[in-house]
Amino acid sequence: MEKSFGSTGHGAGRRMSRKEAVRTLRGRRVVEELGERGVTVRWEGRDTLYEEHPLAYKDVHEVAAVCEGAGLARRIVRLEPLAVIKG
Image 1 (cartoon, helix red, strand yellow):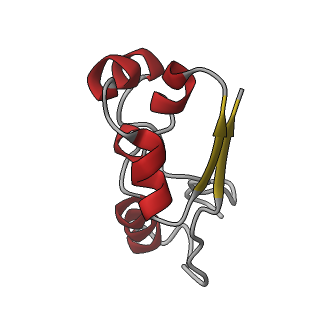
Image 2: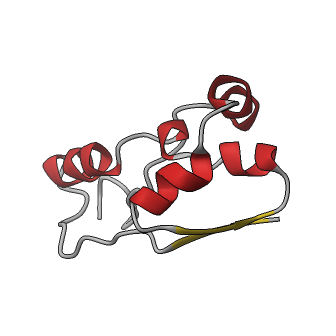
């Protein structure tokens, strides 16, 4: 409680800005790549989907390990994404 006022990371955080993700990931088969991971995708506009590509985010497992190692949180469950909805 003294280190973080009872708060910790609530997600991985972005590795790339939205504009950088669109520029960098343009041309990837995003829907197919997410589908191969079992993630359902609904979107309007391909650029909005590039913004949410997994490569645009930090590795959530590394972020959780850092939070746990710092004594800010304890991992108790592992969640997997089911869907991405962008409009």
